[in-house]
Picture (cartoon, helix red, strand yellow):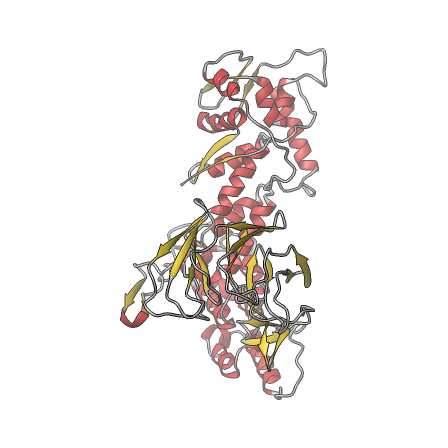
Length: 547
């Protein structure tokens, strides 16, 4: 897999040394002094736009006007233009200039402790603004780009690693990121681990080698994405079972990470029967205390689910929102949320001031957009935006036309509103909204009028199906050509229907598709064999394999 990106240039700081040794010494001293407060360089928000002149590449290829040489550890030598290399690296600017000691001549030669292919990538970026990164070179590139302060390449490497996160490499990537202060990569890595914990347990051999404190930190997290707390206990059993003799001393601290109060009384009793729990006096006492608390709670007892860790549910990875609608003969402004882990609906106080029904609803970049609708008297062309983090509704730009029974979908950071009813007639017009510009624009209309249809985005095409007075006609919009095209009609005519898109069908090696739309799940990944007798892993202070 290759990852090529054009990035913007950083402005270099004023720092200089007269020799390579002096430059290295000051760089190490500055890193040490700023260790505790160093900011992340994973993102490029501080960079300014820069165009790389094509003539730079021409001069480099033809070795013209070169005024410096860089020698690598493997004997490779590169003729370079010192000003161009200094522009991307404060380290090389300090090396090649004499701004501190004016009596010394400027250096024209440098030696670096990297191989020629790595330095070649640095030069590629310095002269063209592009850098090719692969799975084979990304970690070495990041390591040496950090050493020689080529921050743009560090950002490219972090972006590649974030894009490449998977259950099999996320733990290793997180450890690597912590060594180079890549805070954004560390943040994304932690989120990935917590959101994909079930896959991590099954697919990652590294799971069995993480340290006890690291595992405890993961299991305690409110954002851990598990179906229930039995999965957390199963993870503990798998990790301890890899080396029970050495790891059972951590059972009590890990058991306290399980939110036993969210389980049934019978499930906690079953946990208590595990042999290692029965052998541990602390665990037995803890389980008995939990059972006593659970057994003493009546149906009307008020439990503080937020502050009581034992009963507090995990934060849902996904939340279902129900906004507005028609109820008891009139539109409402109720907003309810469904917690799939707790299996309960909750009323929200973040109600919109205007009751409405038959509106469009979609989410984009963490925000929920409510489009058009009808309140029993008025047909709306306005749009409201809800921020679930800030708990705030905000008005956004209005559409050109009022629309209820409108079909809404998103594509590439834009919102599409199609058809609908304006109080007089069904419409074929289509509007597209850009959140960045806060502006709607009219685009090519559909081939027929329709309302109460359903829309979805599939492979960069926007499909709309059914609607109007019960039709089976389907068409799709291609944003590249800005036009609508016929698609195969449905077998059954439909109005007031709903459509959704399913991506990521199960791998054929793990699932077999059967008739009647059922799935047969293949065997789970077997637990790896303990190879501690044949190897000598690096251990942490607690005697655990360190990750």
